[in-house]
Image (cartoon, rainbow, N blue to C red; front, side, top):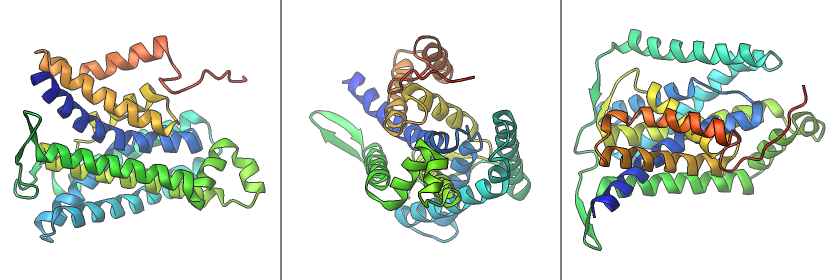
Length: 292
């Protein structure tokens, strides 16, 4: 019973990682950029949700939608200001810029509101215990899992069934050919950042409700773990990011259940080292030879 309980907790945690990892993998699939500022977009989403609930006195779902909208616009602004001018620059220049943007967001938030943590009100989503097949499962865990799965299904629909989704896949495959076919590559890249950032914003609100405490540097560790999840699944592959996040969340919960909670954060990076050694293309990736 305890094992199944930890498995459910791990899936709920993993679904948060998966939502953040989707942003990493979408951006990498389109522009081959590791957006290390993505974890800080997650942090901004958590604070937007918090202030929507505490200051505007909104319920959970409207606060979630506001956080997703603000983060989508924020992601587009980051892309236009920081990354678009470096579209044809070296990868190391874009990577250094991403780290700089991350630090700017973190310490900009500290400058604006201070470094003190905040706590989501417990009454936002009252926690009830639901008995399923003899297991007492938190209603919050089920709701978080349900919202995360819905957003992942919605993303799959957007990517495979909408015009912008087809444009994203075309640009990912060959940006120059897509441009020749009349696709606005700049707008497509901005839309990719917007969708990925909206998912990170949703993850921030869900994280805040589930773990209560939020603070300006909260995006660092979940952001790095989500990056590990994206690499685990195969960076650039959307189903891989989903599976990678869920697998990583389950591994973390099981490590804690076995009494090694101090290794909870470290295990993610052990997984990263192992995947880079034994399967660098990830679980869903294919080994591709790169011409030099």
